[in-house]
Image 1 (cartoon, one colour):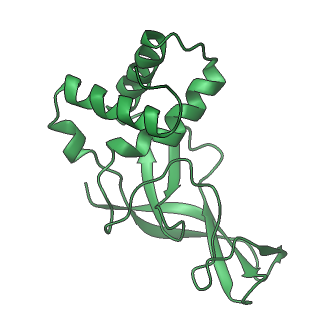
Image 2: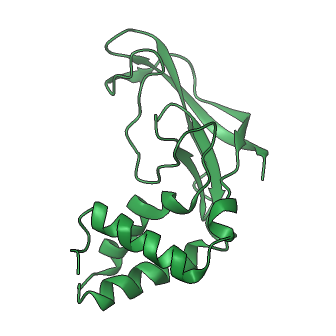
Length: 164
């Protein structure tokens, strides 16, 4: 799908370990359904609009179906957590990195530390950035049965269901 320019709030803070500055980007609180997602290494971002994403609802329903078939009770909150943790399997690689919806840990680009100072080192600002848009080309060409088998394997690997 390519890249998109989006307006974000930028905060710059210092890494506690190596002292290098790190920029963090946030979407507006009014950007309902839109998310900036970390790639696997948690140093790059990608963009998705889950409201317009044609596979998100189908994936969520497939997870519900698999959990029910395995007699696993779940709340809406639990389901959201499971989908958040596993939805990346539907996404194409970006710059050879896996898309990880569950990755919330911010990491320094230099030393990969997750410890940052509390205070901003420059004033917060609104800027426009260019980020890749998450796509599902590989997922799109699979049959429903193939998709369901991949989802089952992912749920098993994440200990959400047991082998049956």
